[in-house]
Length: 249
Image (cartoon, rainbow, N blue to C red):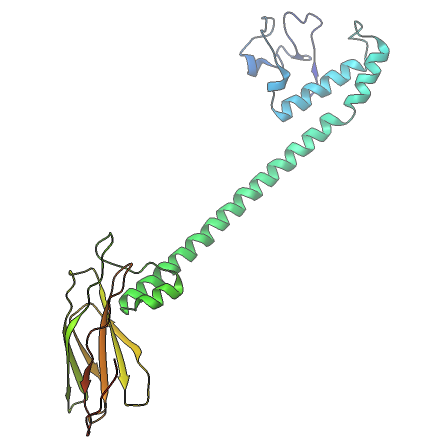
């Protein structure tokens, strides 16, 4: 569909031939024959601007705009050239690219949501397993505490350990910390040749080491770990074997 300009430009800037509709009617809410104020082609959408320019190019190539010198009209027509058609094509391509961009963003967001979900499951699994702070640090998760804010972990004390013939060593100690602010790391040294290592964590002030070998040496110590602080170790408690041996803390 081609658009043609009125010669009477103080009344209307354009209409569709064989119709009574103004080309810019939808922009100016103006009926054919009514005066338009401050029409600005710079505010047209890409497609409307391409149509507008194509119409002007047609007029420049004809005899309608006799007020413009013929050489100038030729130069202007050449300057416009295929620009209107190019703008149309580029606008269509941009629309396709925008649709693809939105689809890519949607897919990306779905992937990000899935990763976050799995990371939440990993963090929950660490909580369920009462993992020590070191394992949270390895992953980069914040170590969980019930209450927020800074809290200085206090040193546990009075650790005692008792061994039973059923293969269970029972530990008790005084945590000396506010409820919910810390987790307690149970460190163990088995026999007299191994090194100290983190064995378990608990939020309680007692612990049962099951599956031990009665008559063997088991040495224990405890420390408290808060969100941003770690206490000193408690005293060492020993479940002795056949012969009492001294164990360095």
